[in-house]
Figure 1 (cartoon, rainbow, N blue to C red):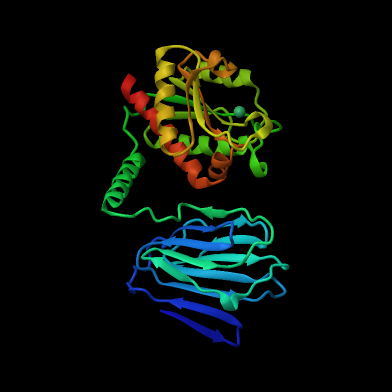
Figure 2: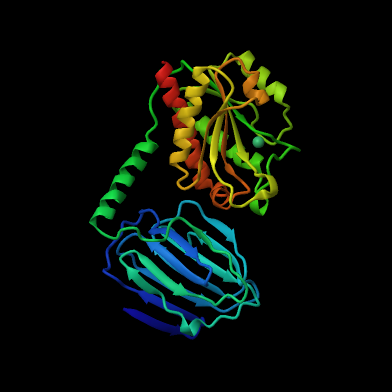
Length: 361
Ligand SMILES: [Zn+2]
């Protein structure tokens, strides 16, 4: 059932949808699972099943442009805003009040909208669609997560359940002997050296520092002693990184980098892990490579390789250099922009390290 309410006072155009109302606990997590504004100007949403949505439109005022928003039950964890393109100025995800999630699409002044024709349509239990505009110029898709419903039949459904299970296992990191191991994590570059610069100006130094810090946190929780070669944006030469690790007499050294392709080719994506020598280095590289691939579906496996990078060549312990994706690649860059993906990569690297430490005992 779709109902339009014209609240003249506020000049709101409201769309209420009620489908199989179900009562959600107050402190539930956000019912919004994924969203995308596609190249044809259609907003697609994926929610938890049986969700009640409320959609609103407000004309531009002195403070902001035309805005369309949808309210979802459940509280959003990380409020954030994403830059738009074409007629879309910005997308904001927020919590208007406790226990709620709001997705706001704000339009630019020159966006010519016709909200009277808008219909938020439920495609099935958990998918929604509304056509917001007809792009005059090519519009770049914006979104987070996978909107497409992959449940086509029972077989597919089972696959999905299976996938969820393994995701759960993925979050469970293996235990290793407490307070036995020490690990050096080396976030590449820093300070005046930003490393690779990718699509939209995304900088290697920022990405690898955030990933490295999460790896440190995760390993510390397993009582592994972890030191970072740099904790902030400092200019750190390669030699001090190596001598730091050698002086610490660490068990392993892991340098974290992100790639850039020559000519900034957007079609080049993928992950690779380098070691310099020894079966231990190779084993560590293999463990990490396997895990980072698992969290980067579709991104090519560029393999475990021998490399003569200074930091892995001159450290005395098993050492690897991991490239967590191409900042210049369309697929990888879109992911590396997001904290959620950086967290996944950090989990993967931590898991690879822990599995290695477990194996060598
Ligand atoms: Zn680098």
